[in-house]
Length: 358
Image 1 (cartoon, helix red, strand yellow):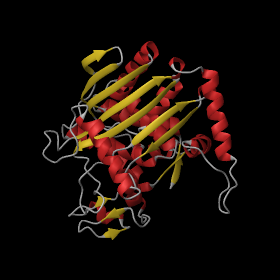
Image 2: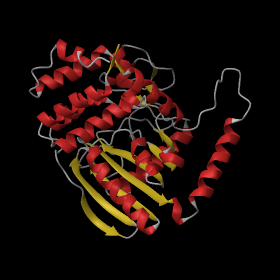
Image 3: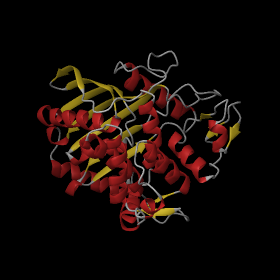
């Protein structure tokens, strides 16, 4: 495990996507998002995804240099088709439009279908919060992304169906909830597999429906499945998110008979509210500060050093990794290096990789 320079690694990943035909803006948007995911500690949604993205592109599951197609637009509502483009640039275009409408009209509902892997969902809640909007995001993966067993079930029936909520604070700060409704994201299973470590108990089933903590068994044929978090409560939330983000957007709920069942497609339903249209900034910030202090001042249990609000762990990790670099295991580096060479970056030898070390 070595630590790598975030800026240099962003440049490296940007070039990989440029080599496949993505324009400069799209290539940087993808690379910047992936590296930032590593910076905040979400390694499961970071540069480990580079090889998989290029694999999907080569299979025709992703289209480069796409723009949003507006199906229907009203003052407070936009229905968008992402045209199977990369999720990061499509999401940025979509949320920029949603923020604009929320600012003009008080709120906006965004229904987005057919975009590639959207990445770390919390990044889009952060974007809205930085623009003084509260947001709630629901995401599903129709077809190829079915990974999670229902409560009491033993095979894959739902996607991980994340939810994110963003709240603006003073000085461009924010509180962000970002969580999957599965007990663990598939990306974290991939990270554990690359690091050759076991998972915690109670997260996944093997292909025969038996509990396991071995990430290898999740990927072996027959493939395993992920359990919902919190038992029936997590399953119920995941089921409803599938309806909101899949059925309501027209991008389909999780089902193997979907016409895009062999394609990795995210669908998103989001609610954006400009806080200035409901209350004053001063009241909103003060009330959240009062609530935050009330919660954090609770007497701590024996093993607790600090009570953390949603998103504080990510902020702390980002501060540390900006100073010390992003840690990446040798297997992930090997996969990215092989991908870079496969797209024509023959200069990516050992010296090139060593130059990326922090």
